[in-house]
Image (cartoon, rainbow, N blue to C red; front, side, top):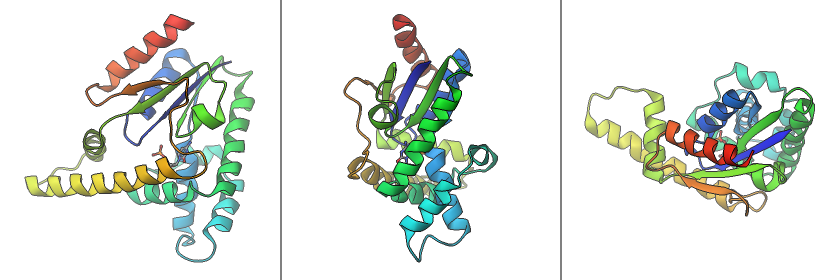
Amino acid sequence: MIKIAIDGTAASGKGTLAKKLASKYNFVHLDTGLLYRKVASDLIDQKKMNYGNLEVNSCEIAKKLDFQDLIKENLRSEEIASLASKIATIPELRKILDNKQKTFVNENINKFSGCVLDGRDIGTKILPNADFKFFIDASIEIRAKRRLLEKNISFLHENDEECMLQSLIEKMIVRDRLDNNRLISPLVPAEDAYVIDTSSMNAEQLFLEVSKIIEGKL
Ligand code: DC
């Protein structure tokens, strides 16, 4: 099985890239951020994020997590994202979710000729022997603008748009700080990863560049 690991910051383009590659090569794809988002979403729904023990509660939810639930729900809100990033610092939770991701790959080994996993620690922790590793990043302003565009909001005043952009930048800085500086599995490029800055690239250009690298080696 050919293994492709894609890591990177929020809104860097890694998710779209992973989907496009999986579809082009007919590989199975897992957006690993969804696992953390699903646990965060259940904590919010069950009103368990502000009291009690966040570690015990999130681990309990993670143990019961079913991959089918990940595609059913909309897990893309900023509230879910920031709690996901907070709980992603809990070592015991990461252990449970790491095992789920590795099981996912093993269960698909005989069903697909390849897999694409995207997240924060795929090249360093989940698939350290991946055939291809990519680390995708872009400037914070560009990433915030992409997130804003995804939201598809029409603003009456330019000021409102600017305010929302600033608020997104602030939230992203907090999330980047948590993801980059946690003690366990921080977001860092694997030594053997291709590092790509997408600040001046669109999704198609990134896809073409990465496809060229993959096909040059296969
Ligand atoms: O990729 P995303 O924005 O959906 O991820 C949400 C959060 O989940 C992210 O801020 C950190 C965490 N995460 C992680 O720690 N490790 C991963 N492999 C994927 C996501």
